[in-house]
Image (tube, rainbow, N blue to C red; front, side, top):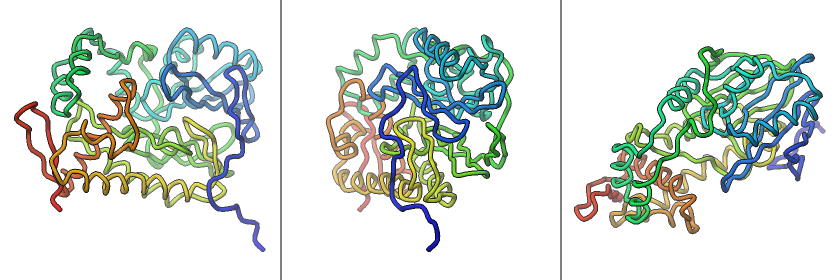
Length: 349
């Protein structure tokens, strides 16, 4: 009988590494985990042995705690060897947060996509002391809870620069179709989308490794949202297209190293789950908006659980994304509701 990988999701490691430790997931590759101060309380990073130095994949937030942890990790599990290169999968703060610090303090090369670098640098250079008018208008159009709107309107907003180190000029670009050598392995670069534009994933030619960032996670679906910066974006359409395309590369034996949760095998199964998750959500939503509803009125349909204040913002942008996809693909109409000025969506069925 052929020696084939078992089908279905499998998790080779049931317990993640402690914040001051590492797990070797393949020869010369260490899995590290840094804490995050939110419900999703961690980010996975990976260190690839280059002989006299390390390449790391993603970085964690920029904070005193993260910098101290990295100092301990370099002295401990990384054996005192320097970090010579940082490869960033996408522009979100938990992935690019300390890239600039590694460049300026450690002399590391930054490798990422042009979109990730430009977006992160723009956002770090654009701090806001009060919520922009466009953001407040977007909240109203999305049907944000009135009390929460008033609170958000009076608070200093989250700023990228709060948790992302300044990015100096200069980076090395990667793009779709490139190849890159990391830790002695040659990887093909394939771009994802939806969760973040031009999200880099890496597929090894030499063994079964896939570095997936947040594009492919083992047990959660990454947030796919619409924001005031591009209110007519269609990240759901982009997400489904990217998953369909990347699923053609998936093998049962692939060991997927994601940005959160646990590494896993059984990638074809997981790709089917990720794709169906959003198609199923769209079908539920289409039924739920037989009567007009705003984005904030669709939380129970989409998420099937209570949404607290800490999750509200991400839930809102994801609800907008799904409703807007139905609208832009002709499956729903939308109109402004007179009493609160929110967009309400109604299925055409």
